[in-house]
Amino acid sequence: MTTTVRRAWWGGNAHVIYTIVVFVILASLDNAAIALIPSMVPQLRETFEVGTTAIGILTGAQVLTTAVTAVVWGYLADSRDRKKLLLWGTIIWAVAVGSSGITTSYWSLLGLQVIAGVGLGSIASVGFSVISDFIAPRRRGLAMSFWGLSQGIGSLVGSLLASQAGADSHTPPFMILAVAGFLFSLLFLTTFEAPRGFKEPELQELYAGGEKYDYAIDTAQIQELRNVKTNRWLVLQGLTAQVAYGSLIWVPLLYQEKVIAEGYSQATGQRVGGLFAALFTVGALFSILFGHIGDRWQRRDLSGRAYVSAIGILSAIPFFLVFFWVPLRGLDVTDGASTVTFIPEVLTAIVTNPWVALAFLSAIIALALTSADSPNWFALIADVNLPEHRGTVFGVGNFINGTGRAVGTGLTTVTADAFRKILPPPFNLALGLSLFQVFFLPTGWCYWKVSKTCPADIEAVRETLRERANTESR
Image 1: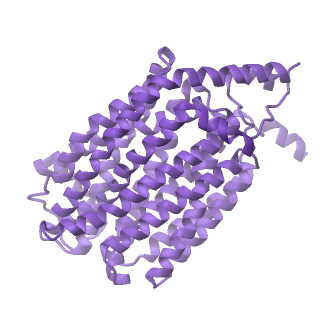
Image 2 (image 1 turned 90 degrees about the horizontal axis):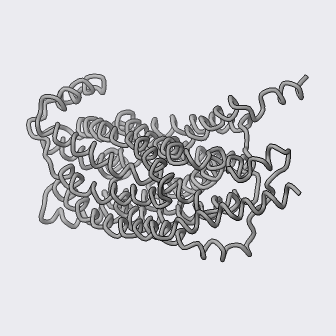
Image 3 (image 1 turned 45 degrees about the horizontal axis):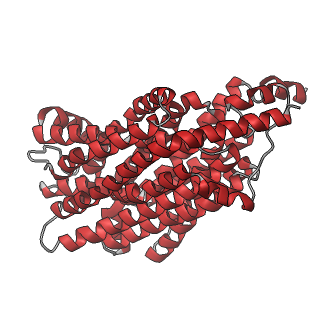
């Protein structure tokens, strides 16, 4: 009876959709965990009696650990059972995040966040390896936009959870997220793990005939990955792009300081600033549109995805500058009120206060334009690499991304603190964030280089898959 039921639905369309949903939610929880601390800076400074720089170093250490371990997780994903890897990775970060909620020492919090980073590294690399096998190339950008969007939503959830539930104590946000992590780790037991290359057009006849694509990575193939020219540029762009992206994690703090600068209390600043920061992320929803545009352009020109990413990133810079510097003059909220009271007041301010409206509009446009980057970067990694290489390349890319993000995250607060000698908050942080926008310029150049190399690399992958399919089916 058990065998019959399993055969009826295991691996079917409904099971595949269920699996994708579980992985997408897990990716969002991953980013929620990373977003907790930057949205609780005022409270954490008071609880642990440290400065903003110390909190920035803590966050940067977690991001860097996530990036470093992602390389190892990615390699394992290309050669081992990916479901088990994700299960253990989730358990590691959930335990560490839950323990962070009860610690009273800054140094123990730092150690626990580093341990959490070890587990979080699995979600990005292993999760990407699995998701890429569920998606056909012609819809890869659109599908990856949902994968990337889930991470943005996770950051939003983490920011809201921390700024609202963590305004008085850091314990609730950590505990809530840890419980969610444990619950979703159990769902792994019922997900479907697609075989490698499951949706590649060149392998469809192979799978239809009951054969399997059994290739797995080994250390001798590492040099092959280095020889793929597009890989070099896709990895390099992350070093500069993520310095700029890493600095943006402090936007909640910027708007908390803007609210406080208008004469409101710290608790009100944390809650209202967190709500503003959360609303601004609506612009990330445009990643769905830009993922679709990348797919359409890619069908006509194999350089299409690279062009979409380059245009989006470079066009966003002036809108970010406006977003950083516009003040919240005339802000009218009830000091000391609850989140329930603040929500309608913040929404009203967006419509009635021209300064708040300008901040909202500039943020939406800036984030909409940069949202073109992630789905097309994800899709390009899958396009130019064989199925058994994608986890490893993504892991390396994620390591470089994380290194850049850790630098941006850590140095933004250091830079802002240095500027505090000549500029009061929030202007010191606005200046620091503005300076880090310069790192988007070399990112655009890297994508221009990708546009020149990716057509040949994509064709090489397709040819290799066709040859292997023909060999296996004989």
